[in-house]
Amino acid sequence: MRKIEHLGIAVKDIDASLKIYETLLNRSCYKKEGVESEGVLTAFLEIGETKIELLQATNEDSPIAKFIAKKGPGIHHIAFDVEDIDSEIKRLESEGFELINKTPKDGADNKIIAFLHPKSTDGILVELCQEKKN
Ligand code: ZN
Image (cartoon, rainbow, N blue to C red; front, side, top):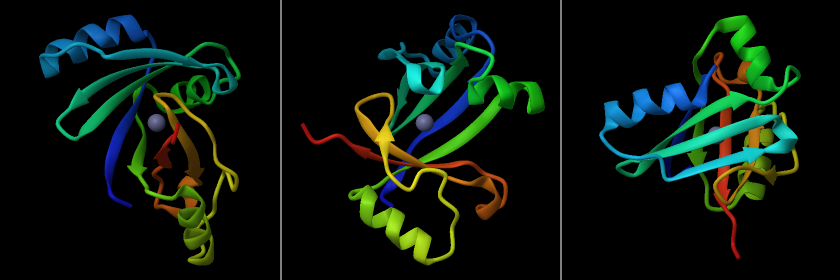
């Protein structure tokens, strides 16, 4: 684990939330991207060495739609930057953490990602993300 790569925030209306966060942070969104497999639309803002990822559901079955129905808008996950996602997955599994994804998958913003189950991290959904090597 090298640093917090981004904080994921579940929102109802990404354009309305972008206006708030662009004003709050006094900078513009640098990327908007859909992740079809997850049923989400994402928008990223850079803040120092880390980022804010806004997530809006694009369908009712999206994990973001379910999260908002249950808890309302708010912090959805913390993403940590890792150098080698496969070895981190192995390490965390051997330490007893429950992985939602044992095999990394494609995420937004040129990353491969894997999630840890919140029940093994005191209620926080944790994302591991590794920059894609092109
Ligand atoms: Zn994320």
